[in-house]
Image 1 (cartoon, one colour):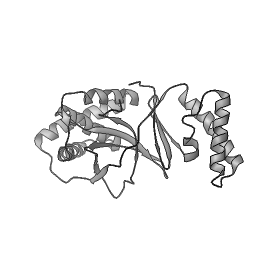
Image 2 (cartoon, rainbow, N blue to C red):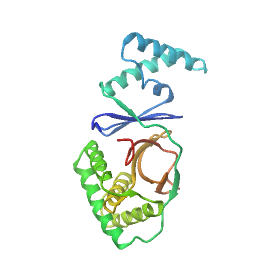
Image 3 (tube, rainbow, N blue to C red):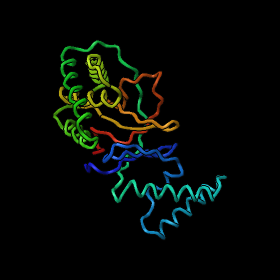
Image 4 (tube, rainbow, N blue to C red):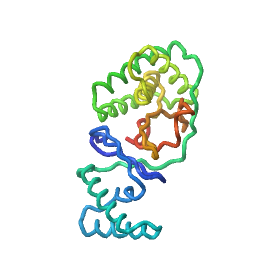
Length: 236
């Protein structure tokens, strides 16, 4: 895995990009998203922008405005990519979203959750996000089997219990990474996912087991989020 590459995914509302070099997210509307595969050579680029302008004009959009937006977006993407490859996460079927489990965590899960949370807080405080992702990949290589949904619920419950003792921030990024690490320590593999949504744009992090999003608060999470980077499967 290259620590400096861009990760991207497309959806009906546009595309989201995560720059692992800086940890910054970029949201592209559907028009700008068509430029992700823009050719580098000037003649091919001009032809691609012309074709995209014609397609959007056929839907009733103002061609002059579309052309100006595409030209500006192309320049911004050039600065963002800086010659680096873009790694696309293929679209898959939407996962099942599970609400927060109320199960009481077992003693073993509490112990490993404390270690996982401590490591997650240390990594996210002291390391750039690209190194945090590398650490998560290393944890995913530990011996173990994919976690089942009930086991993933137990890990999350234990991490949330451990988080009540921490006076600082334990939001989705810290919590999901802690679950990923704690599960790895007990021979279970959870997918750690970084993603985004549109309108309004927001980034989110979560864990999945057997195509189930684990432990989301239904009242404050607007789904679907678009997965952009996953740790624990083929998106290496």
